[in-house]
Image (spheres, rainbow, N blue to C red):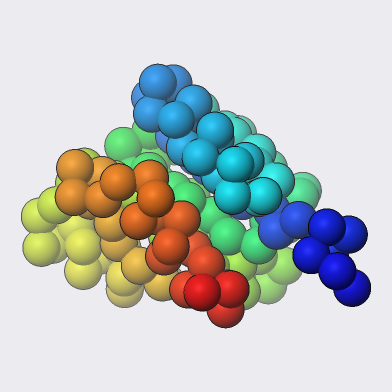
Length: 130
């Protein structure tokens, strides 16, 4: 298959900051990913279960359901437990980082420390495209 007719990798972005979400959606689309966006935890969990993305970018502080609860649900469900989840958040306390990794996140990125291009590089590294 050539690069142009390969199916696009699907990213689910669960982020309630609409400005930030727009920035990430634009960047990910430019990198040839298919992107779905949810602005709260409940919608994010529902989309993950229904669309089975290749990677979930998940904020922790979200309306309706926290990112930690979304992560617990995803990892507790046989249908979604193998979807890699990268936590992308402003919570940088060691306890939060440890909790996220203990719950099954493959990486924990603090928004203030990573540019969107660096997040894309992490995703590509995770899925073996970098």
